[in-house]
Image (cartoon, rainbow, N blue to C red; front, side, top):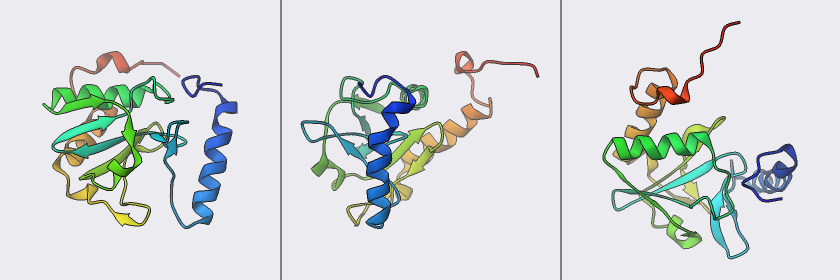
Length: 154
C-alpha cells in the first residue's frame, strides 16, 4: 500500500524500523525508498536546512501528504524562506545545518544527530522561526491559517 494512504496497516514497516533503531540506541529513524532516497520518519515528515533553505521530499517520493507538512511549508514561505521539494540523498543529511521532524505527534522536533554525527539544529534561526510560528498557529495566534481550524462544540 502506498505511504500516501494513511491507514493503520501502513504503520507496520515504520514500527519495525523504529523498534530496530531503538535497539541500536537511536530515538527515531528516517526511512528510505526503493532508490535509497530519504523519505520520512515513521510518524512524521522531515525538513533539512541547508544554505538558508528548507528541503523536503516531494509527495511523489513515498511520503504521506500531511497537514502538518503543508502548514510548515506555508509558514516557511510566509516567513520568507525558500522551500525546495525534491528527493534527498542520505549523504545530504551529514551536511545539513539542521534537520527537524514535523507531524501531529512530533509537532516540530529537532534532530540532534544522524548516524551519531552531530547536527546543530538548535543553532538554526530557521528552525527556531518555524518552531515559534508553528506553535503560534497551533494556539490560533497567527493570522492567515484560519482554514486549518475547525471549531466544534462539546
